[in-house]
Figure (cartoon, helix red, strand yellow):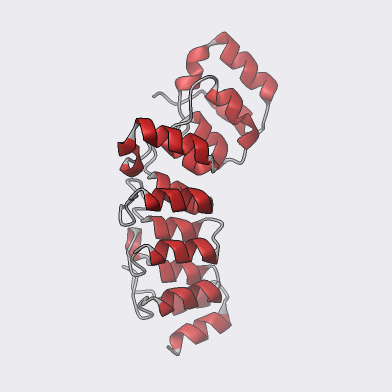
Length: 219
């Protein structure tokens, strides 16, 4: 895919349906262009919070597995995987598996279905974050129920992403003591260091979560 013109990307961010419609009517091939990280325009719209534009950008084609996972569209995801089962562990053009995307956007039912179908819990994204679905869950909106699903299914609570970051580091960086406790109860290493030597306790402290930093340091 080629990157969409800046005018179209700006119109998507601004939800300017008039401009989008005019550009597409003038050149329908724009629908096959991509966002700045080579993601589809449907995924780009999801990323910038312009979900209402998805039908226009999708046009007549079905959602692919990554788009359906990001949008929380269970029927569309089921259809996509029924016709292309290998998509469950394939990366999107911008580096995510369907499970990464469902975890980040906290689509519990989607994550459940992907896990039930054998989605890999330990697959690293192929972009600069180099993380696993559990990291993605902590980097997104996050809820404890989805975290528990991933961990119960076998997600590694000590998995390391880019820079050596662990799920505990991410939970601590958010000041989320509940998620920190969940991870610790499942065996997360409280003394784990990132590549630069920073522990979860130190990271919580630098983010201003003093009480959590003290709790982690005392473990």
